[in-house]
Length: 524
Image (cartoon, rainbow, N blue to C red; front, side, top):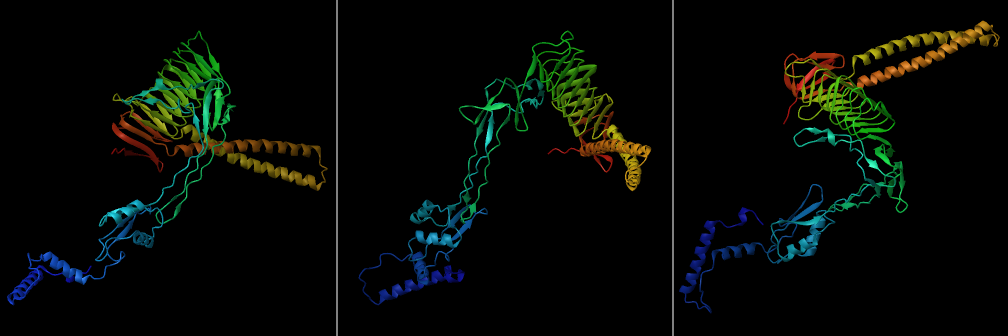
């Protein structure tokens, strides 16, 4: 189509109309005879259309008439916009449309039904989907469908009101011999995709899982079905099935029951009275209340109703300690310590100390966590002295300095002894091995001292590295308080401490350039 200059203005149309009417009148005045009298005037729109059509005798091609193709950024969809065909052209053909698409780079995924409909129904001046790519159909890696929950006992259940239900936890998942514990599902291959430009979208390769290891056997009927080898408690660790025996007590444990020691798991479905000692090679779970007891576990300790230690209870676990509350007790954990409330207790964790539930409070005592502390409140309005510490404790720095000093001293001594031994060995060599017995004794004595010193030096180097690694682990530790921090609290990071002089809230404390820094927790 042309520009505005190719069209008649309204004034020009009106002038043209007057000239036509004048010609008609003039023709009638001369007495000219017509075969058919004009029954009505010619519409002015028809006059304009006839004039425009006379100027457009040649129809524009699809590439020139304003039609276009739009392609999505990911090249997965293409739309076609068609303008009305020019004069002398009733409709487009499929060949024209396909040629137009291919000229614009669209080679695959044609939507033939839409293209046919656009031609048949004369769909113009609308963007219509005319090509779609095929997304990649991802495959599936081989996987095991476990008939038990490997993490069932690892975290307490959080209730709707925000409190934490420790009674829902259990270290127990019992299985019987020949019971199905896992079913293997083989990998499923995916399919490549493609975009509208004909590019292939490759699918990721799938892989089969390694065979299940541990105390399992395959079913004789189906090698993909795994059965338990024996009765007991089942766990999944490092890709291996472990079935262990269990010692379960249905009732209370008192001093009459005596000391309980078991290489596996111990579960007590009752209360534990003061004075009882329980040792487990694996986990300890106590359903009822716990008084001033001594608990030692090679795994986790779960106290579903908490512990009231009366300043005499001690809980030690190589794993985690979970408790509804901890009062007047000493707790040492190789993993995390998680509770609703900690009151006037001494806590030491190589992981984190996490206070959950509605209270989530640490009140009184000393709480240490190597990797960080998270609580809702620390201290109380009565300003009870409450010490919280993260990172390495002073004892680790002391051990590190001792190890470094010993390493320097032993290295110097070792060098001195080595030089003396080397000198004697040179003399022995110069004498062709013929030396006095007293010199031979000195050489053997030096060799013994050198070997002993090397061993001690190696142990000191290991101790130094261990202390350095421990200190490095705790450098990023933080204390996060999602509620109040009361006056009387002492915040400690590594060897630095900072008394809280004024109650505050929503704070995070961290170490930076050897100083304790703090920032307000922002909630959006």
